[in-house]
Image (cartoon, rainbow, N blue to C red; front, side, top):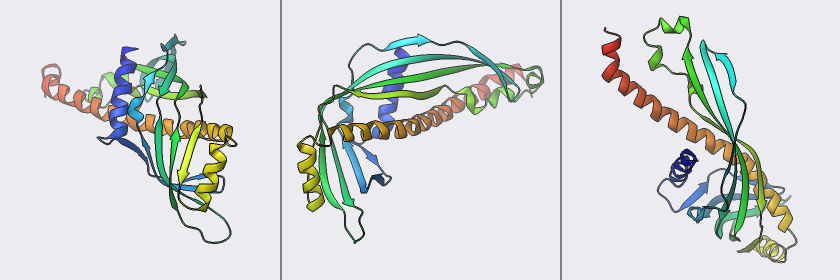
Length: 231
């Protein structure tokens, strides 16, 4: 669990990249509504709503690219709390006539997000053929890095959202949303977007950590391998 806390802190630092908000650069479509320039503020308010539950999964053994891989996986159930978030963006309704984007602001009331992750750590053994290659130790395959997969996500303790903005569509949408008509719909859409974007962020995190580990391994080998494998 200590490792998870370290990865969570490191991931949040990468997520914010020195900014006080997280920016979604891609255009997002929800039914006939298009959203752009999305910024989510106050993600630093994340906290653990309960103690994480950790379960060890069966060990898997396989051969990959000449390596014997023993993979140990764990299932982690998290209840992540988020205090009030503010989402600023521009929206427009896509219809048969031309429309333009108008700014709006969405306030997401405090919520608890239940997340189930599958975290795996591969342990590699060099096969006989690779053992003869002195350079094999400096060329660890990409799958040698840990992996994180999102297995389940669900919003709990949902308190709804509030919307205010400019333009006819945003004003009408704000009235309907603030009255609670679309609360369940928005809840479902948030869950779907989390399922879509979290794996992408996990992949970015894995790539960054793999690069850092490879640099550390290469540096260590440059310093000490010459004593083991003289040129």
